[in-house]
Length: 437
Image (cartoon, rainbow, N blue to C red):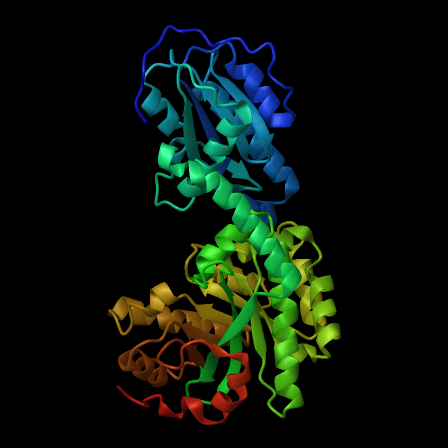
């Protein structure tokens, strides 16, 4: 992003058509500003998780404090426009001192630490700036779309999450709309599919479950879309909850088919933080089980550890209701937070899945092995099963066997397989796993 000095006033647009909402407010804000004008879309990271953990009132408190911070960083003649909870658009005129630093300061570690429900939270933000050059005919709505496209890319970058929109990014605005339309069509036409990652008991290598993973192939090119990219696109399009609900129903349908064929294999389904925020998770579970005719004991709900860090916004009540329906609760990505053990004691989990980043270090150092033993000890006190994710090597399997670990999954066990192949794999596909390294 190059800073260009100019004393040229903004051209008048007496015949410009009226714009609605945020774009209209942005048009009025930038009209009197000297060009070039930098418009930055800014968003708080992990807002869904914060809402789930601390509740809606805490989000309102956070939003007010954050907007106050933005106004302090961008005083008049800059303009700060609220765009929704945890979202804002900041317009900075050419006269802004040290424009590059000003944009960077809107995000990153410069944000304040807030106290929410007695817990200190440092805001993490992402920033997507776009520039309106002198003489440009770009309208406010297109400028806003460019900034939001840059923001979406910034949110996928490592810290500091700042991505400046460039001419080469212009097609991404249209691409985003196309992807949203394709996702909606895929939901309506049943174009997604599930594959399953088997979970085996360490002591005898018996298959004790299968984790559902979503897959999608682009209809235009036949390209297989990576799961992370698919979920990010669904979140950007506002369709993540609908995609998650579909996956829950389809996983239950598959498990019911296994059961009808004589193979009672529990299926586990990942739940996004936003699905908790809706407050109807138990209704979705009842609907999925009822439609498929699947007993609740053959369903496990996988919940990220971060969502369970506190009993905020009714999470614990929803999980209790899910367990009352007969389903199990699994804490996913365990060990990635700072409150894992305390979280384990607060939540009635049936299973703990040690995060693959920790498993990757095994056999590791004495400290790594002590962490493994600590998780196992606390989980067993609470009657929860311990699962290691991402097992890829025989020496990792040998350590789990030596420690009498409960279960494991990963490429050493099996790569994801088609749902139709799960019963056959359960009958003998895991027999080839080495007992020792």
